[in-house]
Image (cartoon, rainbow, N blue to C red; front, side):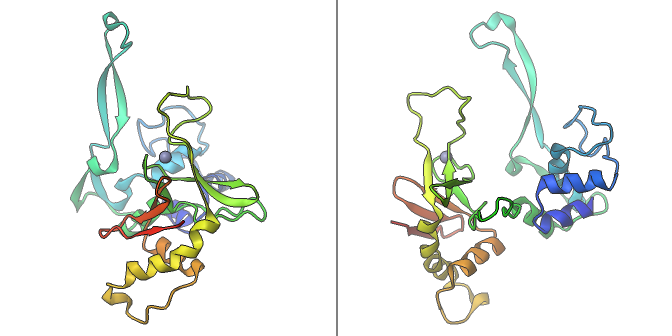
Length: 247
Ligand SMILES: [Zn+2]
């Protein structure tokens, strides 16, 4: 289990970790996350099992409650005579209850666990297509992580606000948000100066870092940026909420 966390910290993709576990013929524990994945997999690892392990805070040695809840919902809102059914739903991590005492041996440190939750695999699989900002941008209107996409020969980030081609279009649907990477990068050094100017632990001259160093700083500090397509601004998810306009 701790090997899986180590691989993820090394920025390996979930798919690559899953393949490696199967290649090494390590049996998939059926009880990796009981209840979550009831389908039989014949001891084979599948993506959802690896993803569930990486997201399970029990591996920090603490007991966790309230990760799921049961919702009592109408089977058909148009026809209440059909009655209700129970649906298991996942609570957001802010609703989880986590013990302060260690309940069992820790397989991963809390610092590493938190890092893993923000880790995205290196996306260098398509030759020549590198997304420097992958995983760092959120869509301000809907809060979703923006997805990297290659558009007009350039790295671009997009949010469809949870819609897909399988979703029925609605009248009030927001237009997709797009932002080009080369429109963001030149503004990041200024943002880093604002993020660090009050920090005593990062003293030194306020020399603008290179865009690459700025990206590295955001990743190290696990800071994400919320993109507002209307004002074309990026807001850091820090207590001070530093904001830059990208024009
Ligand atoms: Zn969105």
